[in-house]
Image 1 (cartoon, one colour):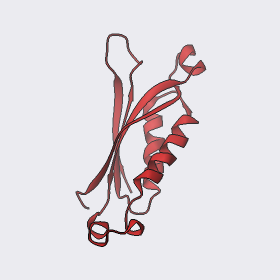
Image 2 (tube, helix red, strand yellow):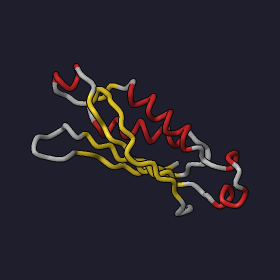
Image 3 (cartoon, helix red, strand yellow):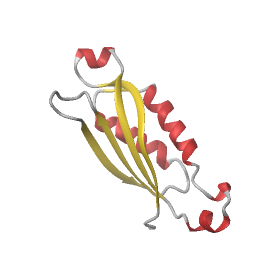
Length: 118
């Protein structure tokens, strides 16, 4: 497995996530960071998009998924994001971090981070 990775940081989205009544009624802000682990040697050598992971497409797929999702747990949201990233044939592993800034009073954010592979 390669140590190469593509970093997508600070995706901002709104979704239904949480167990409290207010959290189920109104969309909340979430922040998403994604590390896509893939062999970048070939696209680095060829400079050809067809040989690369198109991170714009992955970001769009993740945003569409998140903004239409409804989960009780941030953990489940992160799993869904990871599954979408692993659909790309060149992505070998993915690290997903989801932060929910409004989760707890007197904190900057609460988040989860998962690492999933094929």
